[in-house]
Amino acid sequence: MATPDAVTVLKHSLVSPPSSAAATEMSLPLTFLDMPWLHFSPIQRLVLYEVPQLSRAHFIEHIIPKLEHSLSLTLQHFLPLAGNLIVPSNSNSGTPEIRYKNGSSLALIIAECTTTDFNYLTANHARNCRDFHPLIPELKPSTEDDSGSTARITPVLALQVTLFPDCGMSIGISNHHTVGDAGSIFGFMKTWAALSSKFFEDNIDRDDAAATLVSYSPPCYDRTMIKDTKGLGSIFWDQGVVFLKLFQHESSTDTTAKPMTKKVRRSFVISRNNIEKLKSLALQKRPQLVHLSSFTVICAHVWTCLVKCRGPSGEQVVK
Image 1 (cartoon, one colour):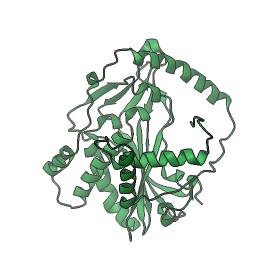
Image 2: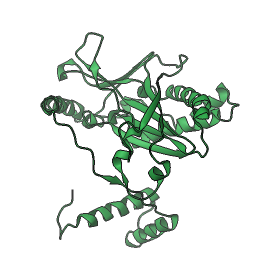
Image 3: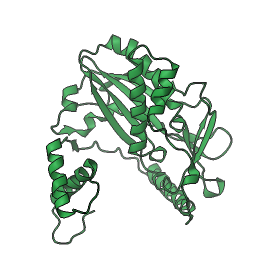
Image 4: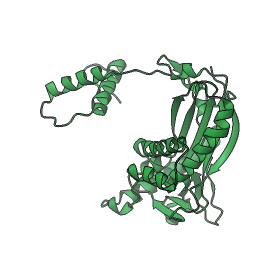
């Protein structure tokens, strides 16, 4: 079982896009699609990589420098991830935006874990959720804008790379939901992974790096493509200010320690054969479907299992 001190921090880094990045400043106003997520807790994700015989020396001397360098190059195409969320104190002071300026950076923690079994974390059996918590970085709390305004500034992304000696490593991700959904964040992670793999070949040059980045669909930052014909952004922002004041009041009056979670995490493997059977079953009932993705049938199967587990009776609505 992991404890809060199960991880030893080896290094704190601040990683910025390269100084040669085309843009020196970027502001992305939140749209009405982003606004509902403004005051939610950060999204946390963890990716585990099995690397047998990975020594501490090799990890520190070879892997980390290349990960940091490739991360910097990746950020030049994902500038908002190195920026901050700017939230005005009231609706009369403007609207929230994600702002990047020259010199902005994201926090990268390099750590080592020797008290938790790597194979235990990667197995399919039930594992205590708190065993994963030390592997996830925390986003720094919001601070006041030093420019003289009353806005609050919050980092939007933090990363943690943790070594499991002779077993592998993990990458923990914490991001504010307004900066990207799962697809956006994993698009960034895939680009970083592809560029890192080039660096580990030891023969990459600037042109190779650029070609690798271009081969992945670059993110689109054109806010004019999103039409808010009903003015929902302003409505959600006004409602969010009220919610934020209530949330801050409850947080300041609640001095009790939050209990540790008693939840467990378990992995269920669905084989290719299982997926094809699910598709066949769905097409038997809905033959008019033109395209049926694996993601769709897996989600449908999981949701159906959840409904059955909760055991509703008759036409009872399950939330």
